[in-house]
Image (cartoon, rainbow, N blue to C red):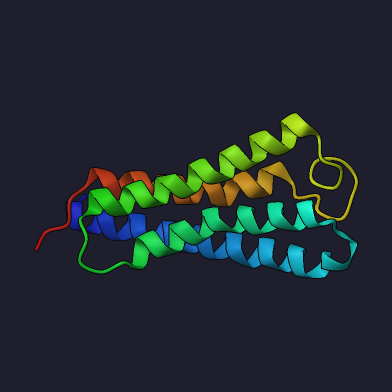
Length: 128
């Protein structure tokens, strides 16, 4: 695989996963906003920054692919830190039955898309 095509595939994968994550988490947050406390709404907004970094990292012009991949992988770390915090504090509605229950399989599917895209972009340099 050509290094330029691997970089393009990585950015495309990260942009797709980030867009999917933004759409789903934004839709869940919008549909359940009347039922949430302020803390749960802040967690939802914080959760949306992870997919946003995947999209931003893939569309920033004139930066090296190492920086792009680092931004994308930073989004993955934010999502993982968020889920670790939610699981450790056992916030009702995020993990158990409640308005903001998101399946871990679905959340990690687009998180893995951003992570693989970040690794591909970081690993392969773009030819001029």
